[in-house]
Image 1 (cartoon, each protein chain N blue to C red):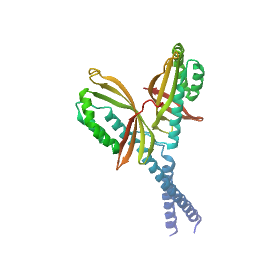
Image 2: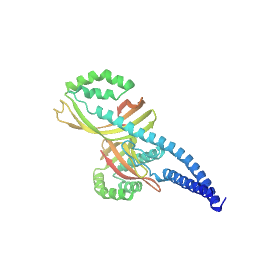
Image 3: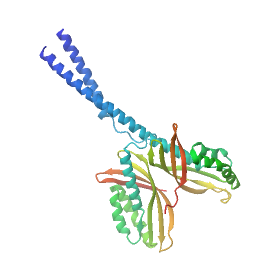
Image 4: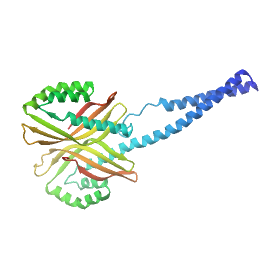
Length: 167
Length: 167
């Protein structure tokens, strides 16, 4: 064996050990990054689901029954059952007062999240017009707390409540 | 035969060196992800939670004022801010102080809720819901349900307020 061959053999062994160590680190890092990506995407998913539900909730029209159904479409459990049971009454009240509410989510933020449950706060801005306002849209800003649960591959609303005076 | 062995070892060296370089790039060459709509939170839960809790406490302090102690308030809350934010805040403080003193206004603020909107390594945005009570000339306090988007940036001493938007 020549000197060059001995040196190259030593280098191959060294690089092999380095590559094996690197491979182990890559394997572990890849797993950590995949877990982190899943957790990070969960935030996006729950915010998107909460924004959809809150947007549906602040966009109700007396002349568009589908707007009432849109809230139920993103809901689940007792909240959905209660909402569906009361939806005919809600529709009658909206129609009686010729009520139209419009709005959008200005900001929303995750206050708690786990793989199967999340709580999101949302701030909305919009308007409400009805017979009392003689059809004139009046500004209405709301604060909501939305509880979501993971059902299948979707995040659905298990509760939605106004955040009022906490005192 | 000897030249063939040397050649094979040299090729093995190159392949292993390339493999190690690829592994090093994967481990240290990929930059941290930036927040997107799909992945709005790209830092750890503990870091995000710490930033949001600091944002909530600081926002409550910033929005709690009294006509008797406005100068002390200004001196205290500007230590919670980045230099840029503190400068902007001081510029708006004088007319606010004059109105506050003229009305003998006392405003107390408490946090009704908070959540993370976006979070990256260099900036975190928090939605903070604040309940504000303001009394003027010793009268009955009026209630305001405030919503604030608080931008926090990291510093050597912890998270600092870099911007506050309210609605």
